Length: 202
Ligand code: GAR
Image 1 (cartoon, rainbow, N blue to C red):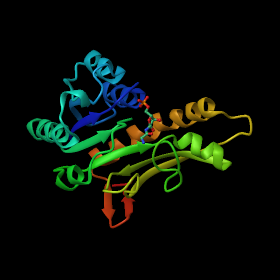
Image 2: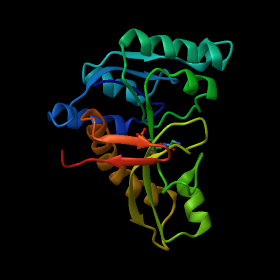
Image 3: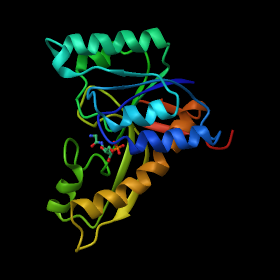
Image 4: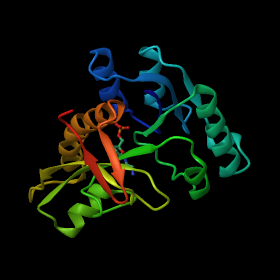
């Protein structure tokens, strides 16, 4: 499966995918890594792994539509079959999502539908939940509202702050994102309306 990744920052989820791929346990072809931030650490990680990179910095475009047109053309040129968002912090427009020629997946640091949007870990702490986690989901036109592929829970402790909770969640993100991409690449994921069925045994 030909995949591309969009990431805005540190790129630790991208790295988790690259590590699995280099260990021959992720049957994908990384066609490219793109970012809206020219200095994103994710681009450096991709270059080190020999994956072509492209920056789509906001300041180079008159508006979001022209930036997204460039991203769409890039995906088309690369023949991408799955777009992976890994800490891509610019919300894709409804128009981009509607017109996308391949499925788009995202990882979010909460147990959706709780705490969508920005600062999910802070939202969880402020709400006072005892359990949080992360979610891999298909991207639809809403905010973190698409069908859920995989989730993993972690405990929330009274002494947690945003950093300690984020770190605990990130560890499981690095496990479930490669697992979800592997299942997708092996065609074991079927989306039926809101529900995602995973066939782990065929
Ligand atoms: C991850 O925690 C990811 O779940 C989150 O940003 C972080 C990116 O880290 N994504 C979102 O909040 C999307 N709404 P990374 O750059 O090290 O992979």
